[in-house]
Image (cartoon, rainbow, N blue to C red; front, side):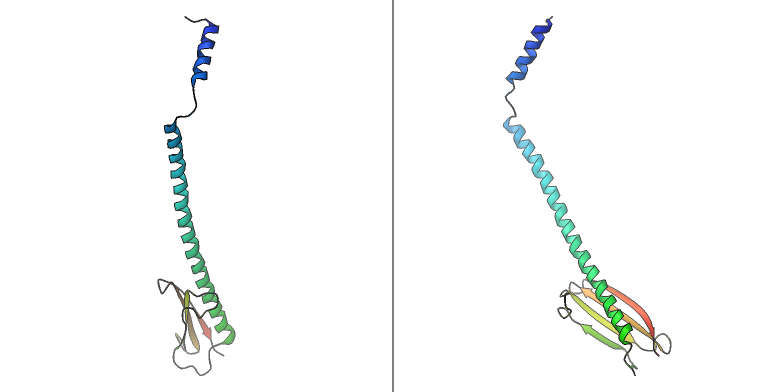
Length: 139
């Protein structure tokens, strides 16, 4: 059996003989870090795509609300007897080059003096759409 000073010397020699990390350990650590960074890059692409889609959806809803407010403020054209359809094609709406907006006013629907106002907004060449609908009474 060793005495205390001999055991201390032996453990001290073991510690002093370690030379640091081997090349294999360094390569493995770099591989783990690389895989972690690669995973974060994938999340970044997904997050960017989601933010882009969300921005276009928000813009579409805002465009529909704006058009709906315009019709409420201006009213229905007098003497309208058949459906009125106005389309603003892609690239014609300021600040929204990827959106198309269509306003449809259907007079006396569902009742006499009550007009259906529908606004449909499409983006990404019709791949996505949102719609708003309301009724407006004429004076």
